[in-house]
Amino acid sequence: MNQTLLLGLIGVALAGLFGYHGIYASKQEQVRVIQAQITEEQANQQAQARVAGSLQELEQHRKRLAPEPDTSWLVREVVALSKRAGVQLTTINQDVPQAFQKFTRLSVSLQFAASYHQVGSFLDELERSERFFHIDHLEITHPAEEEQPPAIQLVVSTLYVPPATTSAVGAAK
Image (cartoon, rainbow, N blue to C red; front, side, top):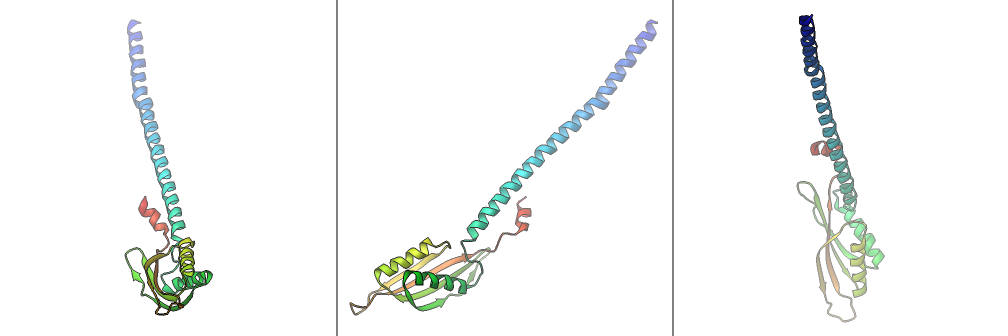
């Protein structure tokens, strides 16, 4: 009977050992793998949310720039702002758009005669516009006759940046 009891105890011990290593330990490893996958997926989702937020912010800033790579858009915007400032443009020269790797620079040269107040109003309109404009050059030439307003030459530029695409999100992953 002692032998039977001893064999029974050995059998129970072996079954417990087999059960622990064969079932419990493998299930614990599966739990660790699943937890690692959950952590990785959470990190991926957080990264995707950050990228989406950055793309949304980029798009908001891009909307301040030219909506098309055509200088005629810049001319229309600048003419509208000059009218609001009471400036009468005499010459408008569209510069050839300059394409770079990820953006296009648009530029226009303007000439007009204006009072000091009108020039200030026009520059204020450009600066406070919802759109981004850069004043590249400003030259004021005083006229020979005192009654005439000074002649102004102004070069205004902006940028065109194409919209971010969904492929940019995939590249950011």
